[in-house]
Length: 307
Ligand code: IPE
Ligand code: IPE
Ligand code: MG
Ligand code: MG
Ligand code: MG
Image 1: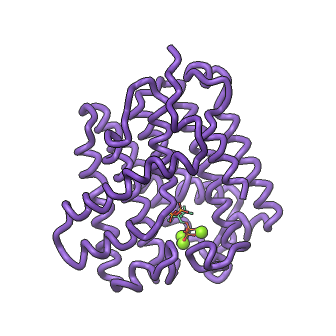
Image 2: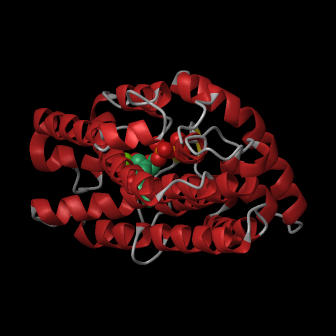
């Protein structure tokens, strides 16, 4: 049975972001205010959360949730989407610490540890990470769906996912590594959370097994593309454009797609990943969702990552 295409699916990525963040951003602020009384912990958590992230992962999750036939409002999806953004924000605070990438600027503002000191920045990350699972537990879905969401997010963000990638990234800094090791590092540090976010959307939207498999394949390829593009932008954009320190990867001797393949090679790898993201939407899966082609919002997202 074909689902009714929902408005958000037929518009641009910018429109979807606008629609959903208009509800998500006030929720993030209000819910952290309600849940965190301790200062300066509250202020440190709220600071990076409210400092202007693109919200790619929660918006992606929301868009995917809208593919399903179940009527699901933005309001219904705030706790899961918020949980995903809490994890993203925590990962950035810890990623910037002196012991990790040692970056003073994040989302166009002084990094959390510059503003609040290292101890509070570490604790703000700890607070965001644990609060994410409290929010999932409070989401307005049945118990089986909530447990599945907890499992997906913990696996994507944890020691078999993003944390493994970050550990590998740190261990390999300044070392010569193979292409296989680089691909695995990138898949873990970035594609895992993007895929987990999309899967949470698929769970909320009650997608079928084959639709969920396509969502996974799509998000996995999109995740590689996203990090390859991040590696490229680090080289070609200015600090002002990035909102984080330009040229940081080379300065820190990071293993990136650009350091490994060169700029032109990285661009080719980006194109290949975006092609794989498109190819994940097979005609059969699209037909089962009531679409003849990739929904406009997802086609536009893929287009946006062209660089
Ligand atoms: C930055 O992610 C970390 C990477 C995985 C490259 P984003 O570029 O999505 O950062 P924000 O959330 O918009 O600040
Ligand atoms: C970050 O990769 C991945 C995570 C934060 C999990 P980077 O270290 O390249 O991210 P930026 O460039 O600092 O945002
Ligand atoms: Mg890093
Ligand atoms: Mg970094
Ligand atoms: Mg980077």
